[in-house]
Length: 128
Image (cartoon, rainbow, N blue to C red; front, side, top):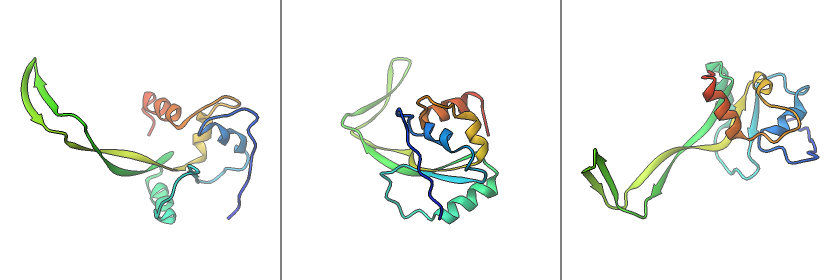
């Protein structure tokens, strides 16, 4: 494994530092948040990314959230259902990404740029 370190003069967010590595990233690469502990098979994750020919692949997990309140379902001001403190499940990002080098074209240099910025940009452009 080859590791390249960079230094941010000013904080660049979660994706901004990739702009410092443009010349080094010419094949699909992994980005992992520093506080991630996982048993995800990274080889299989990268293989899946390559099979799908994606610009960005996000590792996800289902996470339940227990609501502290009763949830009212309504239509046009009329109660149609009630759930007492339900547990809702959401698909969340694990902070592990596989990216094609083309993603670097979306990341500005020298300014803070987070994963959320990248997602909003790609969704707005309906990028594959």
